Image (cartoon, rainbow, N blue to C red; front, side):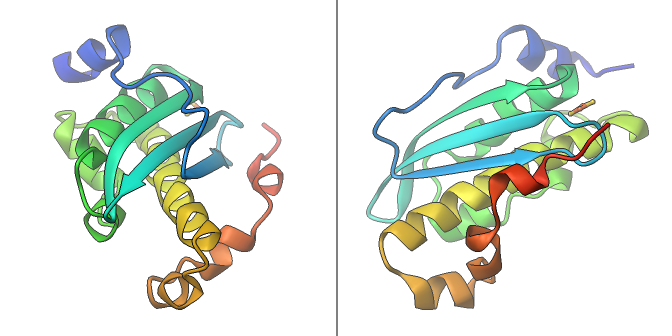
Amino acid sequence: MYSEKVMEHFRNPRNVGVIEDADGVGTVGNPVCGDMMTIYIKVKDDKIVDIKFQTFGCAAAIATSSMATELAKGKTLEEALKITKKTVAEALGGLPPQKMHCSNLAAEALKRAIADYLKKQGRIDELKRLGLDKLSEEEHEEEVCEV
Ligand code: FES
């Protein structure tokens, strides 16, 4: 049911872990299944120079988190914001339709980590311009839905 690339990223996920002194952190829960993930970013000159993730989720969630972090590494914040669940799924050679919701975790957590970074930097105008201001104000815990 999974592509070879999905299986490969599931077996050998890239960028797993925590960045203790992260510049931005984003956590999100999947309302469909209740799984969770957190992304940590280090930013220099508005580029993502390091990124790590922790996922409590299914094989698709792990593979999409791994791919999303690979896609985001080295990108500017604005470029990274263009990474969507579709981008991630395509980079993995597709996902079964019933697993598409899993790829939303990584794209959302990445957005939240960027919003968190901009907020910590006091760049509120940019947060608003990029439509991330509401996102950074939401309580992460509220995103975790019951299965
Ligand atoms: Fe929960 Fe895939 S089933 S993220």
